[in-house]
Image (cartoon, rainbow, N blue to C red):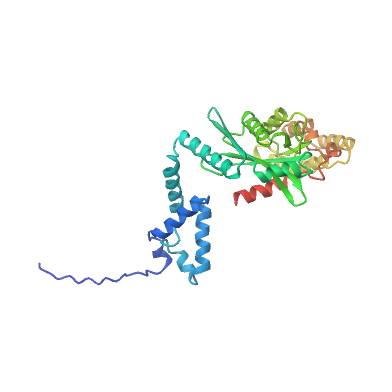
Length: 346
């Protein structure tokens, strides 16, 4: 049947709400701004934050503008544009060769900018090891009086899609923990970390740890076997102590695991007994508290007896009476490292 159609070109929904504006395509101006920020060293997240801050400063109706994808893109778009820009400049990133080439280019560019060798990279089989010691970090090695005495080491992961590990070396000061170097690796094995320490020695030279080439007097670390072995091989004259917070945390986590079968009323008692050993004032008192803790363990809790004996054999690493003559200025935890990691992740 012949008919006549009349079109009313009006939206049947709101077109100025965030629910509608979030589907708009990012404008050319916004894309150019993002690329410019990437070239200045911004990541997708920091570049997006710059755009949001600029919108809040220059628009009175910024809540509505922030919901407009043409002016404030989402993170996924920023990441895809960032990846596309990197591939254009450095080639595809899906292959190991592309990643290695990109890293080498970045390190070379950084060394050229600072006019000094502040970072190095080594490939060992399928693993990569990157060591960074900036100009500021080198000054900390030379000028900070605690650098030859005490160094904190902590690590973190899950910072990128490759699962890289980041090891940070810090020394205490009046203004907090000062960085001595950063090691980025694809593995946390002893051999890989040992290469990282060697790279740090090569970058800093004779001024490492205030001229103490054999290493600082004390390393304070978490209870990680690979870290301990790497330190022993790289700096055999240094003493290793464990962060007492992480030791107590590990003991409590062991006690509350259901598979170990520790009753609810015994968990706190065993934990307090262990804490008494740690905070003993003398070595003899620590021995007395250890024997008392063993006497309080029920016969059916042989697994905890074995666990406690394992820690007692390494008591020089965590019990405070064995650290009285060390020049650590009361630092028994690596809180400085935890604070640094929080800043790094932010």
